[in-house]
Image (tube, rainbow, N blue to C red; front, side, top):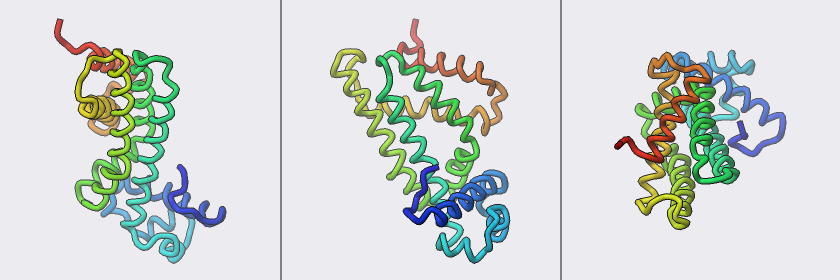
Length: 202
């Protein structure tokens, strides 16, 4: 992950270890079920070191979620910019869903903990999800202006697109869906792409 705070290399390494340990423990035991002592032990640092880098446990949670979403946003930006054609949206959706599956721990932390921490939910919404929608909206608006997609509310289309692959990819691991093999994810992505581009009416 890209460091959230600009610090010296040694300091950055320590923060990275802390955040990786936090992601693992928060995903497994939840924010409330994880102590700072456990965080420090898992990261291989003293508990005092933990608080030298982060004000409190909540700051660690916010940093974990923020970094993860920024990484997802960066990947989405890159893939949309490199797409060969607007009809190749299915490839983007497939890769995004597979990436979400690989980051299932982050998804659990973000979705599960955000409902209990309004400030975390607000930060994720304003700083990351809002930007993802902005990027997707600009992409779809350009496609509509070029006549590739029919004229619609580009922001609503962006929200539908992001929602489809996020919920589908997240559900593979977190909501108990057993069809989580790479081939199953590919099939699901292709199906969602078909629905997204062509609808369901005969």
